[in-house]
Image (cartoon, rainbow over all chains, first blue to last red; front, side, top):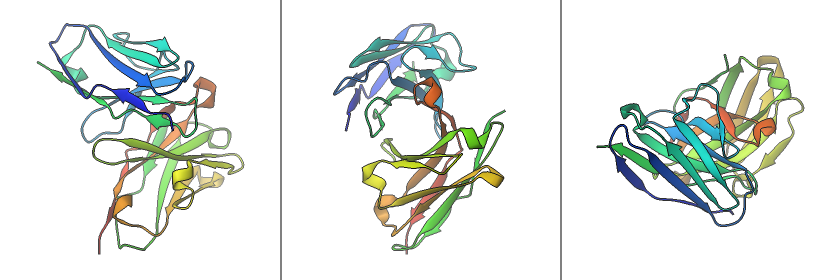
Length: 106
Length: 120
């Protein structure tokens, strides 16, 4: 299975820019997606296929990367962005998720 | 708008089976794919499989092929997942999602999730 590695946690101040990384154990071309999950809620799709903004998602969120290295950027960060962020690949079966990066606001 | 409404929390005994449901609205069920996902605290998420609403065709993660059975009822736009021979390893929150091949296969809409507890 394709392993996706994310840093476990980040802490930033409101108004700053934050980049959340995801590294795949093998190439996934551009088939990387990002989700936001708040406590007690279902995940919400933010970015699909590396850099496409999902419907209703603020333009503060953006994605980049290719192959094995991908990044979700939030700029500027707002207090409401406190959540866990997951990457997920759909190039190699079975589809897999990273373990999540917990974003805390200072 | 797109809605996925899952059935309520389940408490099941070890060795038993459970059937989870996911009623959809706001899109054409018969031309879309549905997927089921498992989340345990950690908080890791695993993909279980997908099913096509049109003909019930399925594709499973090999890890779950003997555990989960996906079905659909087109007449009610509802997806189902049967989980069999439950053990403590199956205790988790299960999500149904719409699965979007046209967008590169993300899970673009999610149900609210259902907690399955396995206990005697």
